[in-house]
Image (cartoon, rainbow, N blue to C red):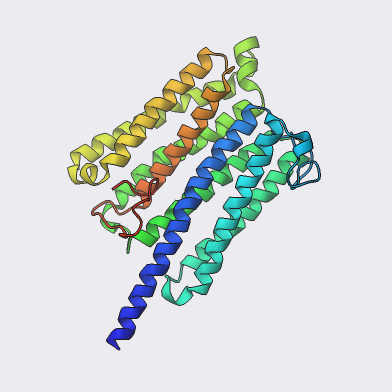
Length: 311
């Protein structure tokens, strides 16, 4: 009986570790996908491939390849790889079901649903000629997939949530929500040319002004979280790498936003960097919400957990 239980625990740890490694790669691939999507949008490459899911009727459109076609093609390729990674995890969660928590296949089913929905929206952005609301929804679902993937990874790491500090989790959800809203407004800003109309002709400035105004509550809430963690010093001690990282990203985000306006949004690399920093902020804030804040619990075999665990 003892040997059976011991073997069960060994298999359970091995399968959780395997899913966690796949999950880490998935999170990095999703962040890369959002970055490539930003580059595709900024370079006006969203319609570089006139058909979907192929590009000019082929998997690799070498005869039509240029920078814009490459960006749109690579964006679709990365999306396909993310989908494959999630489907593999979904299949393994059923294959190893008796060794894993009961909720895991359900969450992976939700992720598969989100991937299907995301692919549908990707098709609609082409069919609807990059409708602004399709593009906004496309980014928002990408963020939901990222947050859900991080939740799964942290749930695999932690045995249970810190119920005694739920207030901390709720507090962290405020800047996360504000960052998501600001990012979606940013997509609306770029997909409707509102920024250029406002800066050049002083027209349609409400979207740009709203995007800028949202930087204020994001800054206040993140700063407040760091101050609260310093008052509850154990929270800061156990999360300082995440907290310092998110604050530095916040400063970088504001700086990039100011530079973007100073250059009249004519520097694609700055705008793309702006979106990447937002994605990293979402990833780190999500990790802070879902990770166990009171103690250091990690699998020994997952030392490469870059985004999901710094400690």
